Image (cartoon, rainbow, N blue to C red; front, side, top):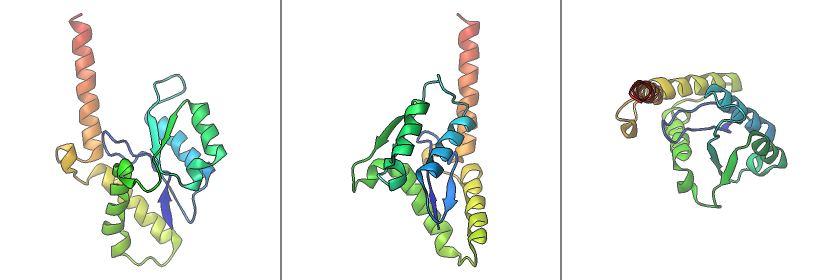
Length: 159
């Protein structure tokens, strides 16, 4: 079992959407990217973020490339054997391994699926990150968005 196709926002470390399965296809990865964009309110015509991935088969597949082109996403693949260039998602996978996979012996796929899903919710909502001023990704995202809205309001009132 693996977790794949995870858009991790480098800014707030949020795991925006994910696929848990015995394999991950280009269709699975494409669906995850579409869901992540929708969850962040990014629709065609908006300034799209860059998407950085490794060179897994799901990401080099023609179907995935077509999805990125259709969504107007710049898909950036890291060079082979350079996981440090995708450090945020690699760190998440390491944390998931340490805090979940190595501590549980799952009896079924459904049990593992439920536990990993719960962990991702915990990771996003409660797990504190030193790089985020000891806030969870969700807390950091909300604080940033609140400050951004306040700054925009202030700017509009004073211009």
